[in-house]
Amino acid sequence: MTFVRRQVRNLGVSLLFVMVASGLWYWQEQDVRDRLSWMGVTTWDELGLTNFHRVLRNESVLIGWSDVRVNPLWVSYRLHHVDDASIGPRPDFQRDWRTLWPIAPDSYFGSGYDRGHLAPNYAIARVHGADAQRDTFLMSNVSPQRPDLNRRLWQRLEEVVIDHFVPRFGAVQIITGPVFPADWLGNVFHRVGLVEVPQAFYKIVVVPGEQPRALAFLMPQTVQGNEPLDRFLVSIDEIEARTGLNFFPLLPDNIEDMLEGGIRPEGWELDKVARLPSRY
Image (cartoon, rainbow, N blue to C red; front, top):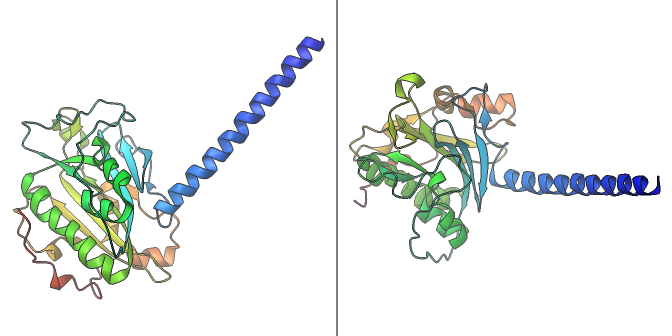
């Protein structure tokens, strides 16, 4: 009986240790997620096969990863003004071993699509440093983008965010990701290898605060690249309807209606930068 009691006691101590360690890990993980998001981590509006995702936490970036679409459904990060930043050399793309399917850096070769960053290399490196920059080159942060979108229009929007919006407001929260056709079965075989090809991409820029403001963009794959950025303004409600996601689940209803229900470019001075040329 003494031996049995000892074994039971040891088992109880082990279970208590696991429970405490798991609780500490969950608390720390939730704390990090809360610091990387605003008004709650993005989730689904109503759970379904095509919007179910796992949250992958990187250095300064959260990714809502779908093993069904083999895409990030959303990528969330914060940017703030930095007076003096040193940008390191551009890293190589790397496979992310946390994804269910093997997506290699050369998986897009010969497809006609670029490896489109969602959390941008330059802005993340400038604000969060080299470790965070390397994480942006994981293939879980990548989605197939047409060259005229990736290298021109999308690049221009990324540049405006870091060079214009961040200095203007001091800090912004970004959520960005792909949009797929409503007919999933009709698009299920439109893939680059294992990766489903999106129809469009969205980017939501929020200035947090008691009276937050937001701009949302929705850009199709068919752009030429030289269009004005303000042509692609939409409401956050429209993006949520197209994606089945809920971007700010903790936002009070009255603020949510104001922030997500309309297009309000006033105060952003977007007209001054909407027609800036691309680098390419």
